[in-house]
Amino acid sequence: MSFSDRFKTYLSVFTSRRMAAILLLGFASGLPLALTGQAMQSWLTADNIDIKTIGLLALVGLPYTYKFLWAPLMDRFEPPLLGRRKGWLLITQSALALLLFFMAGVSPAGNIALFALCAVGVAFFSASQDVVVDAYRVDVTEDAERGVAAALGVLGYRIAMLTSGGLAFLLAEIIGWGQTCALLGGLMAGVAVLTQLIAPKLPFHERHSSGEFLRFALALLLIAGSVGLTLWLLLPLLGQAWAIPLALLAAVACTWLVAARVFGEWRQLAGFIAMLAGAWLGYLLAQQALLLLGYLAGWSDFSPDSKNNWVGLLFVMCELALAIPCALKAARLARFELLLAPMQQYFRMENAWAFLLLIILYKLCDAFAGVLSVTFLQKGIGFSMAEIGVVNKVVGMIATILGGIVGGVLMLRLRLYKSLLLFGILQVISNLGFWALAVFGKGALGSLHLPLSPETLRVFMNGKTITAWDGGFDILLAGAMSIDNFAGGMGTAALVAFLMALCKRGEASATHYAMLSALAAVGRIYVGPSSGYLVEQVGWVHFFEISMLVGLPGLLLLWRLKDKVMRLDQANT
Image (cartoon, rainbow, N blue to C red; front, top):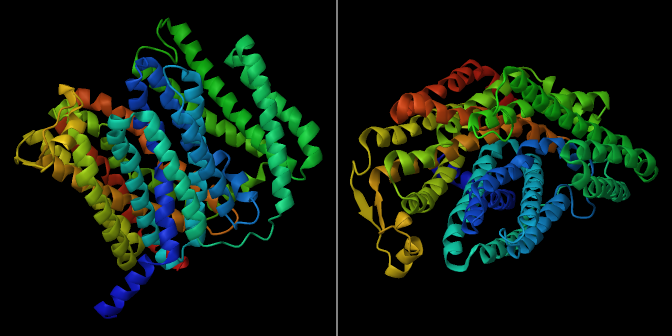
């Protein structure tokens, strides 16, 4: 194939309506995420909320971890008229826009409980949107376009993260967080409209029924109402330990006595509730077992609210580690087929367990080093937050866009295995930039000054010397963050393409992808927190050396699975 023909092929893929929809949905997926993370923390800090409350509100992001629990229901029951997946996209994106508009009028200092409830709602509908976006990308993409779809989805996602996690900070300096949140709500509303106009309509599954969805929605509202009423009445009287189990019992009673009369597949809802009850039981057993251990050992400060952060982390990890197996066991006992059938379908695949291990290991070096990157740059090297933010948002934006385009083109040419290997190596090498900063320090290669007006600089100054910025940025810092954004985006795109290859198009693609992507977050959740302890023991230089070594097992496993990954790619081509 000549260069001209190859260029026309690449251009036709990148400019197709399906790829435009995937880029837009990637942006929609990333937009709300920062609003339950760094942006929310900044908003709370600006309203003088105490640090303990800010730490507790970090838990509003849990729906992103547990989204695979309700993905089966979104797979099976589809809103009518708009086509497969698009109905759920309209519901989740409209809910996000409305919540952001409402949240803009809530003051954290005036009503922290209502603010926290809004944040939980944003996280829930954002995680639910992610479930549908991932499934839509799997269903709408041709096999040969999988790499481009993954690269464009990641590109849109990272641009949105820079928007809500970067540009939003600049806007908040000028107009405040409330109005900034309202603007982001308007942006999400616009995305919802564009999604319906641009995204191609997919045919419904043969089992789809409009009446069935309406009965499902009615049954779900009745159950949610019974749970909400029970918690509202009993939580102030009995506390969390008793109110939540009684709310689950109310949900079971409502399912059997009411929902069973209006909804033919009520047993699926019963299985879903049983799974939630299993997760709560596992959480409670892990917590009580650790409390008993602390009591028997005579440890006075051994509880989930311990002043020792490592004790609190131990509780969270053990609670998650027992909650998920208990949830799956309860799903089996209750015969929750909407979850069990996709799991059985996956594990019938050859090399299923080896692929799961590869998913965990592939991004481990990123999870290991990335969790402390800002802390390293701010406290370890001494850069101001303004300089870090500007370099990440300006230079990082350019590197992200270039990485997305280059990654998409290379994945069209290299296919899945070579892309995973090449981008995985680049991920490991990208940590050399931070290692060089740790070794040579600030100003090793000099600095550059951006020609910005005094009015623009005043936005970053904000009257505070601690965040003051004079328009200059460190060349080595810019290089390190550019390489990290460029390589990290390419590695994520390759992993997304791999997850897409493991998912089968059809009724259960949302459940498949949600389970696999939850597993991909294991490194960030369980390995990332250990980074702080390691830095205290070995220092920043050796820490980044170790972070590069941590990436090697994933590459070695990928090399061992070369033939299997290539067969997987060929089977789907």
